[in-house]
Image (tube, rainbow, N blue to C red; front, top):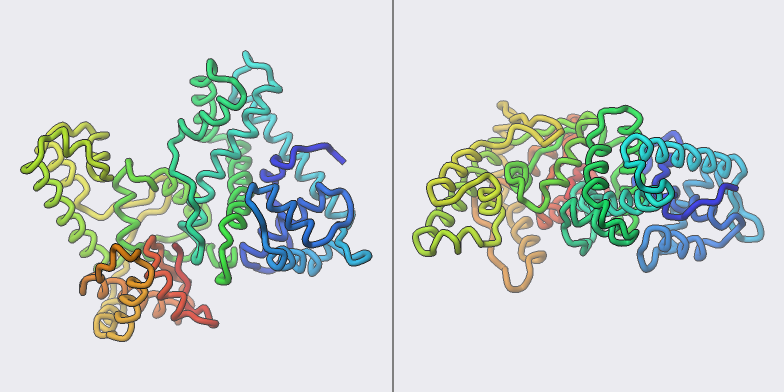
Length: 435
């Protein structure tokens, strides 16, 4: 068996079975197989759980969840039991050998094409292995939180590209080569070469798998095939990060946009979302303009605010510049960066659903109750009538579209909306949404 660093196995993307399975089950199957591969011998579910936790860098993994992955492997005749311990079939071991060999070769080609030859190759390889894991671990957490309902909040601080790369640069004592390594890494990420894109995609999918397990997604599962060619209805809280390049989620949304475009996702918004976007825009503009009347410009510009920081990045120096900046973001964004365009969902049936939603007092009470449950004790502010009308409209339209087999989901960062939808879906899962 080829000797390999366990960390490198996170760049191998394995798929099992011919039927759609939840991402979570496939993730546990994937990582359980890798753990058995590393053991090189039969082992128990509890030992596999410990190994999986070690591979992805978390404290522990539930044995019950590992068993769900092992059931998937058994169903597809990838493992067998011997003396109450699990063994890999030789075919799967050879498959992982082959995948690992391919991954190693692809990695070497990337390094050969993009990274400096003035640094000893073995040093660059060791640094690159850590840098690529650091990069996708950071963004993988954000992808999981943005695309999966029920995720626990991961505590990773949002990092800039420089901060991500600096960690591995310092770890390998490559500070004097920092600039050229950063530029080379950016060149690799932006490469149009199909082989580079294929390698990058596989690494991204594999890291998403490991971060999905790390996030402990919970009982509500998303099947992989459900993500293809679906329609996403965007909530208002998704729209502003698309306009504000200094927003903490901006870089993640660019990566998400690329992924959504590749799987044929359509992104739409409704009139109620457009109206709410304009209300929020108007309120934020008024607050910030008022601040210029009360405080010196340097104080306002020093505020920790996504709107102000983006305005400064765009060269705004005074109140008049900031007013022009707000004028430039008055309209709903036209597309995800590197991703699908945004289209309005509008016809008579949709308008009828919106009217019904606004009269659905029971649903609006449920939304409000979830808001109060989830918001921290120091911020128990009620949702406004317009916000409740908007959230109710999103849910009504999504349920209406799903009845006609139009796979439609809500893309939102609002945890109370997510929780309310999950409660309504219940065991039938007739409605799902992303968060």
